[in-house]
Image (cartoon, one colour):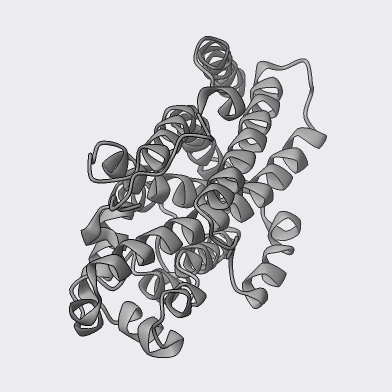
Length: 299
C-alpha cells in the first residue's frame, strides 16, 4: 500500500511538471536575439563573483582586464555546464531505458532531456557569441566523466544533478538581476533558471524516494559517489586556461583563486541550499567528507 501511494505521488508530480513544461518553456534559438551587440564595458558576471576578486592579483589588474576575465569565466562555467548536462542526459536516459514509457514519470524525464538539449545548445551559442573557447573541464576530468553514467545510480545520481543545477542556479539568479551584467548573459541565465526550477523539483523528490529504499550497506557508496562527483564539477567551473587568456600566469592565478577566501565563500554561498537538503536526507557524511571540503561546499 505504501509503495502504491509513493508511485501515485510521483505520477502526480510528473503530471504537474509536464503541464508546467507545456505552459512555460523557451526556445533559445527564437527567444534570444543572438545578433544583438554586446554592451561595451559591461561585465559578464557580478564583479564580486570573479574567482580572483579580493586577491593581490586582482588589485594589479586593469578594469578592462577584469571585465575580460569575467567574460572568460562565464565561458568556462557555461561550457562546464554543457559538459555536465550531456552527462545528465545520459544518466536520465539510463533511468528511462528500464522504465514504463506510458508513465508520466518517464515522460517527464524525456521532457527534461529535451530541455537539457536546448540548454546545451544555448550555452554553446553563448560561448561562441562572446568570442571565447569552449573551455570545459580539464582533460582528466572529462575522461573520468565518461564513467559517471555507468556507475551512477540511486540518490547519488539525482544528488549530483542537484549540486550542479542548484550551484549554477544561485549564481545565475544573482547575475540575471544585476544591471551591470551583459543583457545577453542575463537572458541566458533567466531562461535556464526558469526551466531548471522544474528539474530541481523532480530531482529532489527522487533523492528522497531513493534514500527511503537504499540499504545501510549502499549508503557509504552513495555518499562517496555524490561527494566525489560534486568535487570534480565544482573544481572544474573555472578552467585555469582562462587566466592565461587574459594575460596572467596560469598557475599563479589558479593557486590564488583556490586559496581566495572570497571565491571559497562564493562556492559555499552558491551551494548552501542544496547542501542543507543533502545533509538533511543523510547524503553528507563519511566517506565523502574530504571531497566535500575540497569542493569548498563544506567548510
